[in-house]
Length: 305
Image 1 (cartoon, one colour):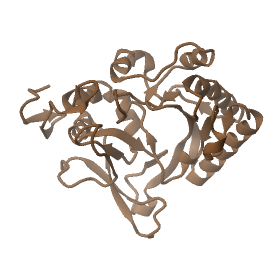
Image 2: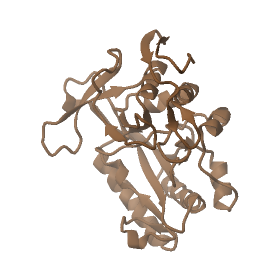
Image 3: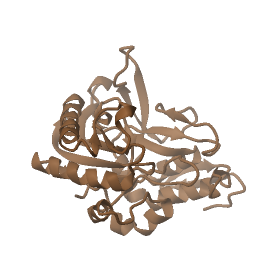
Image 4: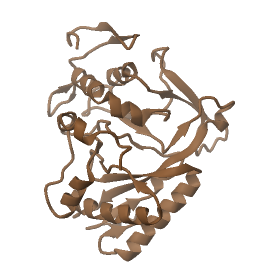
C-alpha cells in the first residue's frame, strides 16, 4: 500500500487508479482508515468477486466515514474509471415505466480498489444475475439463481435464537429438495440463509415460495418465529424476512463490510458447525475483518453447503 498521506496513481490488474486520502479514518472508534479498507477488500477478493460476478452492484457509501452521512448509489457515478464494466437494466419495480439504471459490474481487484477509494463500504446485490448478451435492458435479467431468507432478531432475541431458527429453515428447505448454502452472519444483528435454485426462477415465484416457508415455520414455531413485519409481534422472536426476494430488492453481499458504528463488521459466511453450536448456547458472534481474513481458508466460498 502506498504512503497514505499523499495522493498516488497505482496500477492494479493492468488498470490505472488514482488513490486519495488513504489515511482518512472511516471508522473513528477503531481508527480504521481507507487504506485498511482497501487492503481488506484485496485480501478477500477471491470469494468476494465470486459473489459479485454478473450481479448489478448497489453501493452504500460513506465518503467521510461512518460518523458522517451515507447514501445509496445505483448508477455508475461521474468520474468512475472508464474501464468499469456496466450493464443497463430496466429498473425493477419502477413506477415510471421506463426508468433505467446503469449499474457497475465489479469483477476484478481493480474494481474493488475503486470501491474502497470512493467509500463504498457496503456492497448490495440482488438474487438474480444479468445476461450481458441480451439485446435490450428489458431482457437482461436471467432470473433468480438463489433464494434468501433474512433472520432478524427482535428485542430480547439475539444471534443464538437466529441460529436455532436457521436449523429449522435448513430442515424445511431440505425437505423440498433445496440445498441451503453456508449461513452468513449479517455483520449487523442477524443471519442470512441462501438456498441454491436448480433452475432460474422468476423473482415473484421465489418470493412466494419464501413467504410460504416463513409463514409455515411461524405457524409451527410461534414461540420463536414470526413472519410478519409488525413490530408488536417481534419481541423475543426471530423475523423470517422473505421479502428480500423481490426483484427490486438487494441484500448485503457476503464478505462485504458493514458501515456500522462503532467497529467494522463483515457479512461473513460461517460453518454449519458454528451455527449448531450457537443454537446450543455456545459463543456465536458477528465477525470483524481481521477475523474473516484469519479464517478465510476455513470459511471459503459461500457456494458450499
